[in-house]
Image (cartoon, rainbow, N blue to C red; front, side, top):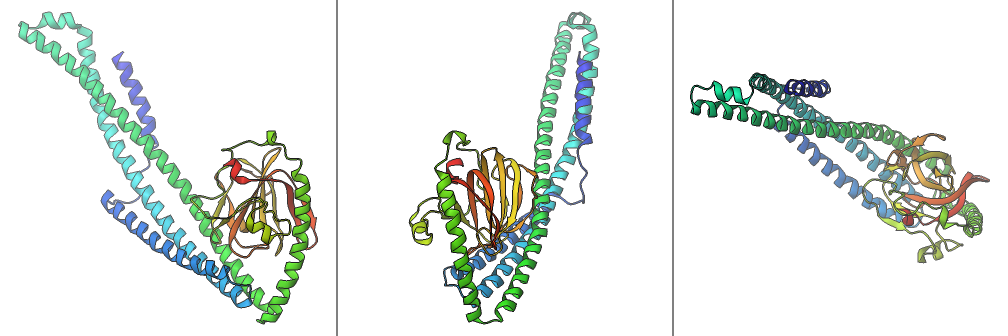
Length: 407
């Protein structure tokens, strides 16, 4: 029986050892921790700069629309995105160091397992020999009563040592499992950060193109810009009124029994972001919209912030309303009667028909469409369809609900 136990232990941990990666560089754990800490401090400095730049953007957002304001906002947005790119670069380096640290810990565990297995094998052999004799034979075999008792005591010590070694081996195994899970998480984070880095570079180029186009269209003249802005506002009011009328009529068909209930959705972003406008007939909505109603939740965030799927689902629509309504948007279908909308995006990174998991990055926040500042408009629908509007293309329209009821 003890020999079989030795074989089982050996087989199980050979499998574990084969999964343990080797360290990339010969560097001590203390040195790695120092490098990781330096990267953390560098990230803190970059984030502080991002917050300062965002403060300028927030201040600009409170000012009246003008060409100079729009150009300045675009310039600061580009600056913030470039800081975001730098943050991604540093974070990629930090995650690489953390993976290297975990690799070293796994290699140390491999050495410990090897030593433990040798000790256990030795104890099993010794116990096999004693087991074949039996306790009575060992007792009778002794030259004296003292020797016999001592021999039986050694047998008990061997059994206790084997139990201790197996317990120690189990603890090392648990450490390996923990470190392997952490390694897997770090690899996922590294993959996400690499994607963020690449997409933020695309968004920067889009912002630079927008600035050039703006200057070309207005010829750097405030009067031309204000004329374009006035025409845009008139057209947007017309589109918005039509959508509001449709959604107000549809809202009467709301059926609470078809909704999934609280806890179904996560917030559509990681961390915390300020809720800048709530759903419903708020005081602001009564002043800002002819309908007096806001059909989603608005969250303030810098351009290029990763947006995530609020629940598992399938991409129902990936669209762009240009300068009107939602700009670049995504709609996800979660059940036959439940959809989420992510609007005013700077970049979309999924395609129609693609299945997505809760927490998966689907794109990046922006300031596209009819928007006075960088934010995410997050909408929840019991049913939704795409309605065509001249100049804006297909726009999501449906029975809207308060997102806060499903977190």
